[in-house]
Length: 337
Image 1 (tube, rainbow, N blue to C red):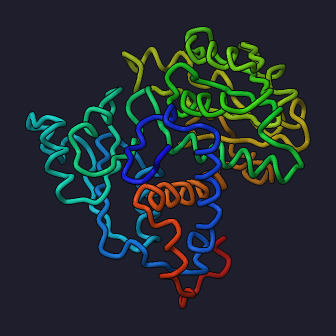
Image 2 (cartoon, helix red, strand yellow):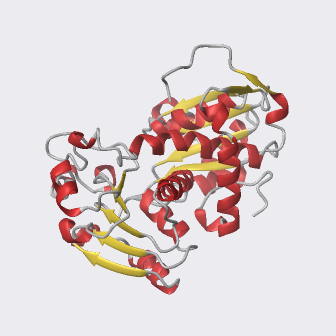
């Protein structure tokens, strides 16, 4: 993949060498994300952060990543706060906003919407999540986290066992992650979900066609027993036709410390794309896991900044200029990381 000036709309754009390139640049961004150094490599550049669907981590993480590279951020949040609510087309919105920005990150509830927007944009566009379709940067940060967590235990992505738990039908982070993992070798997938929320067959076929072992189940306890990674997702209630439909599946699979201790391996890594639903009727990832050292969900969010910094640096062709415009941090940063 030629990153320079490119849109990032789907993980289909990435081969394994591209993934490793992003990870290498992400590693180099760590001193800046950890507030050890400051760089001004994107000084004067403007990010258009266009989030037409609710977001906390993704929106703030992209903005933070851009700021850490020295750029400025302009945001729109929610359909009602934009001209789309007045009937403006994606084409017109893209033409206008790309005149104000050097790069745009967009999220929208409609599948395919970001690609439609990007077709009219004059600057690169990154897909921040389009409905139940894809979430490329989330998949990259998830895979980056998996790789680093496994490395700490003397393992690699090739040959690992991963359990994907929960709403696999509507979970766009799971869809994109499966596509990325298909590029690796000898992975065993344990897909744990209710029948109605199974991973779409196209993804199952992709994994099997690439030589991976796929086992589908609705039993949490047996499905997580051999897993190196347990990746839990919430019920994507906003994708269901009615809230009542979503309520049928909330809380079906709940991972807590007791279940972890009984069924997981001692070093099984726990992941979640967040937000985790901590309401009593859901609680898919219990708060009693918060002190478990193998709970990686907050390392995931930290890694998201690194991955998004790397994407910005590669797309805008400044990855080899970051260090040249850096200096030491001069404010208090102890105990943060």
